[in-house]
Image (cartoon, rainbow, N blue to C red; front, side):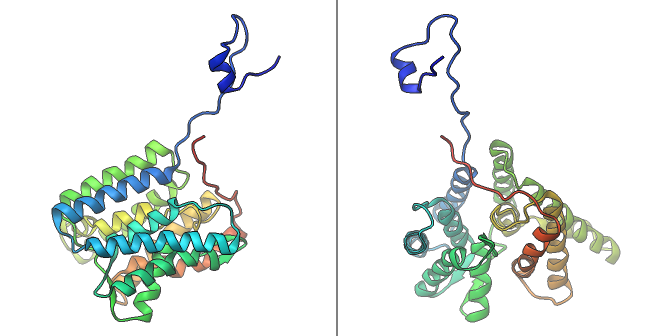
Amino acid sequence: MQTLTPVETAVHPPVAGAAAPVLPALRWDPRLYQIATLSGLLGYGVFWLDLEVQTRTAVAIIVTALVTQLVCTRLTGRGRFDPRSALISALSLCLLLRTGSLGLAMLTAAVAIASKFTLRVRDKHVFNPTNFALVAMMLATGSVWVSPGQWGSGLVFAFLLASAGGLVVNRAARADVTLAFLASWASLLVARSLWLGEPLAIPLHRLENGALVLFAFFMISDPRTTPDSRAGRLLFAALVALAAYAVQFTLFRTNGLLWSLAVCSLIVPLIDWLLPGRRYQWRSSP
């Protein structure tokens, strides 16, 4: 029996008793939800909360990221231009990056996107683009920093709900690494406070951090840079949490999560070799 195409079905409905044509199931690209969530947070921060996000800088970062994505796609011949991942990186930079130089902000965006095309092992990204660009620019210059504690607890909770909702709505394949990291990080903070005899309000306050939510749902969960197997992702999440704890509470350096993710990303190829799994591919809605 000939199967009708969707267009033919609309023009010539199937006769009674005939098998209905099978159409592909609608499946949303998780990146669309992430872009909407980050855009909403950025817009709210710029127009209502004055989160030190300058409109000119945000526009420059987004434009630079998209242009870099287009140029690198053309130069490397890696398929057609796709702005979605570049937008996620650009919006994340708008929320975290702080600098007094517009040129450095644009350079950071360019470094983030270019790293996706240049720093690869077995055709897989080594670093999360946003994480790599922030760490690289903080190391290379003294004029770039990260502002992690700029949101109130109410906005952080709303952002947490929206980000967690993305895991449910889109059935993201990397929810395991996000949940494993949050559980590991929270356990370490609570255990430290119990050991020091601190009130539990202290670790709870450390968890009320917008940068932590952004890190857990949009950086460490990047399916293009996390290990391929579930066991590997759980191990990776625990290692990132342990390394971040050491940076923050042993070395007493700020932005422990960013430094930890950058270093631990270097061992992802080893984890993939020891605990192999199927490589993740983005799925767009038909």
